[in-house]
Amino acid sequence: MTARIVVAGGSMGGLRAAEQLRAAGWTGAVTVVGDEPHMPYNRPPLSKEVLAGRAPFASLAFTPKAAAADVEWRLGTRVVSARLTERTVALDDGPPLSYDGLVVATGMHPRRLRCPGPLTGRHTVRTLTDAQGLRDELNRPDVRVVVVGAGFIGCEVAATAVGLGVREVTVVDPLPLPMVAPLGELLGRALLKRHQERGVRFALGTGVAGFEGEDRVTGVVLSDGTVLPADVVVESVGSAANVEWLEGNGLDLSDGVLTCGQLRVGGRPEVVAVGDVARFPNARYDGVPRRVEHWSIPTDTAKHAAKALVAHLTGTEAEFAPFAPLPTFWSDQHEFRLQSFGAPTLGLDDVRVLDGDEDGDVLVGYHTGGRLVGVVALGGQAAAMGAARYRAQLLKQPALTA
Amino acid sequence: MKVVVDMNKCQDHGQCAFAAPDVFSMDETGHLLYVSDPDDALRDEVEEAADVCPLQAIRIEA
Image 1 (tube, one colour):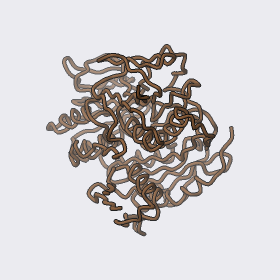
Image 2 (cartoon, each protein chain N blue to C red; image 1 turned 135 degrees about the vertical axis):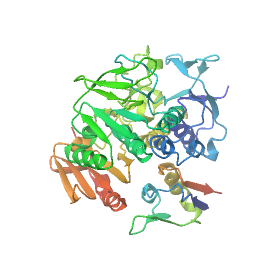
Image 3 (cartoon, chains in turn yellow, blue; image 1 turned 45 degrees about the horizontal axis):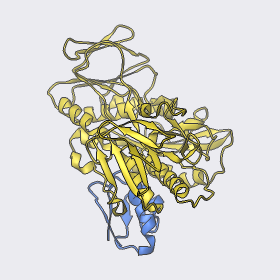
């Protein structure tokens, strides 16, 4: 029988894993199991161009590499459980699949608010279907939108909604500034000002206690009892890992699936994890395992994990350098861009303006022990170019040890 | 090798210029410049550039 690698998860991480298994020399079968009905697509435009109606849904589809043309896609199918000792996974339709190698690429799902109230009119933004539904609602006349959660997705959606001409857009968050957890106070203040100048309202330092309305939401009740009238609610309150199917195998699933520095799971060389479900130590930093929800991570992890898995399965086990990606992310909001390189969250106690000022293009450096560990640019193209100039320096640095 | 960048999609992120600096670069105003017929020896780095493009705007044709 042909040896088989099963990839659990059919998003970007699953696609990149399948492609990289071929690139690493795997000639056996590859089966990708994905619960969405679509081939893998690019998610960042869902909160921006697609929501604004400037890009069609069809434009988001990834073009799989030719080397992955013989990969079997089981779409609209979910992996419901795994028996790692027996090397099988169970599916929600059809018989179980046995495997020689397993790639965990099941990603995340949006967290939902559990407070009381109607569900209709409340949206998340993770999938094509989500974005389509939200876009239809934003295009209704005179809608009032409340976005719960002032993180990247919440702020992108708020900016897009204002750009569409939505009459009233309010962002609610228990923290005092938008995006303050990943970026710190300096940029949080600058971002608050920019959003307010462009018509986004904020209710900060307050949580949500419930939703008003009978059949569908008509208002958002804040912790202090204030009610914000709302026709559409967007919940952007973070995400949780899709790991339930791995339970019962003795794995650490406390936040995603814990991996070693080679992205292997549970000490099993035939099981690896990729994408934002993987909680991995980054040898570039302090060795603390973390999940990373950046767009670049599925590709970075797939490259490393596929090599490690194929080396094991083909008996060509070599010593690999541990996984040590340089993190990078961006966010487009209104007409400005945030561009980050490195690990700003490791340097939030020592934040310095490296160039420009908060009211215009600004480049901010994040330091630990006096050493630069991350940069974030806010503004136009020139600011993003400024951040890129620090990338080589961040890449060259020796590892930070705990 | 033939490289095509969909300039309607490109938003000048510049990730391609890190991955394949012999093929992609940013001009002084931060806009993309690229070589459309790079040597086949550069295939690996061009594939890497196509992978890391946030807008998935880079196509490799033959």
